Amino acid sequence: MTTRGFTGRGRGAGADQPGRLPPGQFLTADFPVLSAGPTPHVPQEEWRFELKVGPRPIKSWSWGDFIRLPIARVTPDIHCVTKWSKFDTSWEGVSIQDLLADAALEPPTPYTLAHSYDDYSTNVPIQDLLGNRGMIAIAYDGKPISADHGGPARLLVPHLYFWKSAKWIKGLQFTSRDEAGFWELRGYHMYGDPWREQRYSGD
Amino acid sequence: MPPEPVRAPKLQWQSSAVIAIEPRTPTVKSFFFKLPRALNFIPGQHMDVRLTAPDGYQAQRSYSIASAPEGTDCIELAIELLQDGEVSPFFFDTVAVGDEIELRGPIGGHFRWSVEDGGPVLLVGGGSGVVPLACMLRHRAARSGSTPIALVYSARTAGDIIFADELHAMHARRDGFHFIPTLTREANPGPGQRTGRIDGSLLADTLALLQATPKLVFVCGTNAFVESATDALVALGVSPSTIRTERYGG
Image 1 (tube, each protein chain N blue to C red):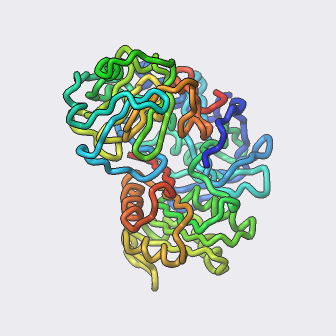
Image 2: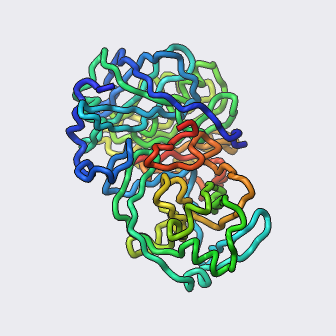
Image 3: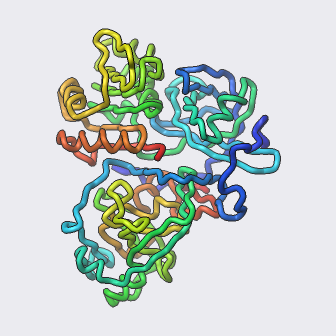
């Protein structure tokens, strides 16, 4: 349905790079913040990251342990379900592949839940985290990640809508089934592919 | 408690006619839409709006619902004009009564409240962040609710207070609702008018008015506004798990 009088005159930035913006998204130069509650302030010296299989802890890293793991750099485009996209964002962190290697763990199930300090969680299939598709990011734009953007560490899965890139991450848990996380229990899509516009549960 | 996982059918786009447009402040207009069928929603939820150009280009945005769920098959979306925006200037300059706009929703399973959720409830709004909070208050009024509830609302000037008359009238009923506006850039504040940003002391005074720890707190505004208000609330001892936020802008 064409909207009377709408030409998209202001479409501007991003529209000149067809194929780079997923459907329904617009390009922003800002980095908007969205979260369900207050920002937790987690000092690096208190931060820990735990890998679990179901209820069973496999390995846990302190900040000091964690930053000695191989550090990868990526510059993906990111896409938020609230419609903004941002191009060429620069992150550093530890790939999930390297993390599993450090724990000598082969993926025991196809599903994971990421857990955060604010009790947020989100589900991501392990296939979407391997092969440098997912990392635990510890720096943005060359600097430590600020608390409101998820620091000290957040998940980064840039090919899915950005709510999957859990802020204030404290652990990754393999689950036997695909278990819904925080937003997935509240009407948002279980997988969240921006290119298929999987915003809400029925999409 | 979180809801059960939703296996809902796809939310369909529905063409909805604009039946009225009402200026609320110099930068906010309300658009009233006649829906093809009644919408069941919970206050705090939003709608997605989609515009389509003749060449197929589309733009989508989300806007909070301002009207109460009780009543008619018409909903009100209050839209703030963002000068460098793409969608809000179109609404302000071009959209007229009788136009058809595509909407889908309701959306949002966390930032929402209805009288069944109980209280006390603290609402903290900055600028157009008051819209979903006003929806909660209109719903409470429509249901003749008596939940203790307070709204702390920061606006630039007296003329920037959205729904001012309605909020003052609700306050005047003395039915457990307290309206506490504060103005950040008002040159000539009226007698008794609070000025300045929302801070720990204003929030502490408001918590005291509620007389009990709030069961739920809803904070909506820019990210900077929400960060500052929620940090102050947590410092006052409000449990982070009771605070729900909605943020917009950079």
